[in-house]
Length: 276
Length: 355
Ligand SMILES: Nc1ncnc2c1ncn2[C@@H]1O[C@H](COP(=O)(O)OP(=O)(O)O)[C@@H](O)[C@H]1O
Ligand SMILES: [Mg+2]
Image 1 (cartoon, protein in one colour):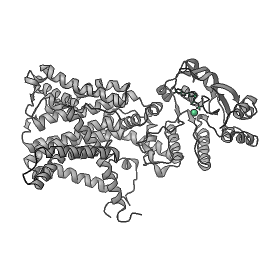
Image 2 (cartoon, protein in one colour; image 1 turned 45 degrees about the vertical axis):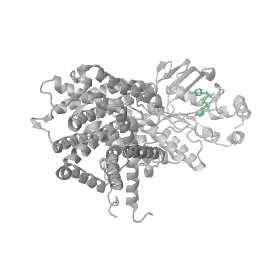
Image 3 (cartoon, chains in turn red, blue; image 1 turned 135 degrees about the horizontal axis):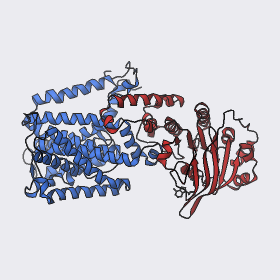
Image 4 (cartoon, helix red, strand yellow; image 1 turned 90 degrees about the horizontal axis):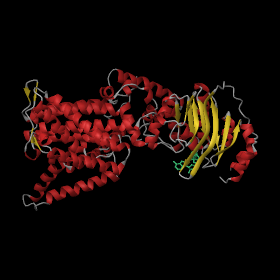
């Protein structure tokens, strides 16, 4: 399957980025991460520029998800440096990452199952809501005003993702494709400057994939959000990415614009060598 | 055809975010409030008020407390009764030792003591989950009851820790009859139930539920799991504490630490399982159910056996029925009576045209 994807890559017209790509906002240098004896990432360096769509590809187990987890502090690398908006750190922390405008979705949907679509997306606003527990207890004045104000923002996200009809549904009852969309909604509600998407189209049918692709491009285009994307569908990746990083067995084997990466012999070998 | 939302359009998010967005629900709720505040005090006998309605209200409050912690924040606790004890003994000591201490203030301070103790025993929740946390709260249950017996200061040096609640007086007005005690309990429980509802529909409650459902994702979106868990322990124990104080002051009058034992903790746990985990209304349904079931069984038995009832059958039957119901709800309907009520309402909405 992957071979077909690679073969068809030559035909895909690469979209010329007409957005203004800015400076480097995230720079990872020499990142190494291991779990016990398992080396998930070995000495990886790459950067992300403002407003770009930066993809990470590679076979299963290559370390892509681990990379995202390092970027927003869920995992702490043993070696390396992370520079985000000019500040150099050894590692990130999930809460700090969130306050600094990083939001994400997960490879295995990580929605709040017992809550409605609306409440799930509302959680995306939590850092922007300032009332305390005692004000919530009264639900009066400032607390009520705040709730309504943020509900408006959440409704914009709901309109954007075209999920108006399911806003009161508990997310556990939704089909897989819609759950993925709601998870994107929760991340978007935080109005992130950097959005990390871990296989947002995995397990979707063609139509759902097209919708998701459109949402990602629109987010990038309309809000200028920088996106780091993990995706297996090569057609999609080569089509919408500005630059692509290729990982294999925790090592970086390629990095560049889609055309460069496609023609990189090491990359082709890595894909031909694995059976997906 | 009576229960419909057709034609009721929400013109603003404020209207959509009300507790009862459907008009019939709101009217129904007002009718229920009127019934409990006005009609019942006029028609209910002293026995009903003192032996049934007051304990149902108090247990509802404790069940709301446990539901906040277990149902909303997902932290299992077997220490509810101990936190009730802290509230009861706390309020008792504030009234005893501080001259002119107003009753309501003592009640709230008792609740705050319980909240503080709850946070202390909730600290393990930051590291452990599920079964292990339940064991840690079990330790709280035994330790608190032991401490209240062991240190006579808490009970003003009475034998085996028994305390007798002082007379309840608010602004010089004595609450000394069952009707007045009932109305006082009802007012406090109603206000605190509203506060609980407000909490669970705001950022605080969404934080609790997010941590319950998926703590890593909660952290990544900026919710602090540690703060969510500890506020849940604090608010939950506050509710149990106030319930415990009412238990002493408007229900029993005389209480001892052993009265707040593990059995009572389990009873409150069963209330939320039967009433509905993660539902404020379910807490009321569960409390009413568990208080009323033995009374109902008793009456049914007497009718059946007409006085020649085999000894012990009643209480054994009660246990069997409880056990069966708990298993039923755990397996078939984890959201309890509250969910059954919800399903009933959805059917009503469609009736008589289900398509
Ligand atoms: N939490 C973890 N504990 C132990 N090993 C892990 C953990 N997360 C990832 N790994 C290991 O790290 C390697 C890379 O995994 P991952 O980043 O999920 O790859 P990918 O997303 O590219 O499929 C795998 O060998 C995986 O088993
Ligand atoms: Mg992965």
